[in-house]
Image 1 (spheres, rainbow, N blue to C red):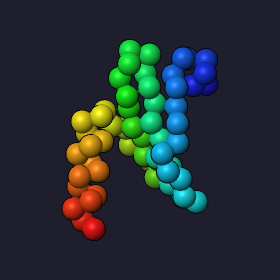
Image 2: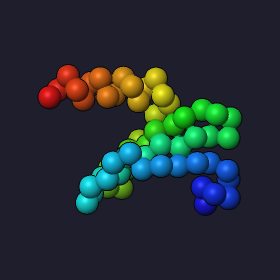
Image 3: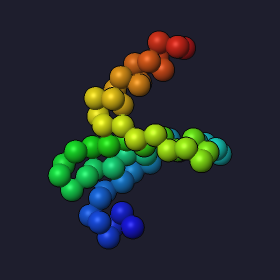
Image 4: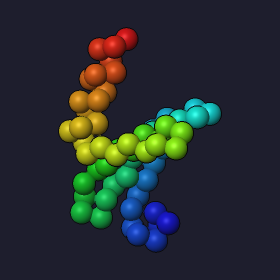
Length: 59
């Protein structure tokens, strides 16, 4: 489906239960996606960077 819409996707990380991937939208915007079981969270670049900062501060 991604190829049909012209959206380029790539996997960032994957485990048995979770998947993180990014997509370059046709307008040039990069979006990030976390698949956590049956839930998918979608982020724009600024939100993604803020989430990464949050996760790093937890560790």
